[in-house]
Image (tube, rainbow, N blue to C red; front, side, top):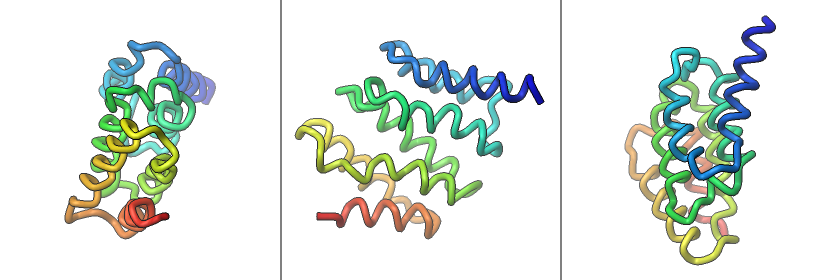
Length: 133
C-alpha cells in the first residue's frame, strides 16, 4: 500500500512541477510502466495534477497542455467516462482567458465535440462549455 501511495504522489509531483520540461514529462509519465489508464488514482495523479494543479504549464501559450489533455480525454472516455468528464471541466472557463489561449481552448473543445463516439458524460461537459455565455 505504501509503495502505491508513494508512486501516485511521485506521479503528481512530476506532473505539477512548474518547469518548461513538464510539457515533455507528462506524455512520458503516461507511458511509464507504473501508469495505467484504468486506474483512476493514477489518472488523477498525472492528468489531474497537470491540468488542475499546474496552471503555468497547462496554460502554456503554445497550447501544448490543452492538446495533451484533449488526446488523453479521448483515450480515457471509452474506459471511464465519468473521470473524463470531470477532467474536462478544466476547459469550462475558457472565455476568461486572453484571446490566444481562449482561441486554442475553443479549438480543442470543438475537436473533442467532433468525435462521434463521445460518451454522454463527456459530451455534456463539452457542449455546456461551448454554449455557456
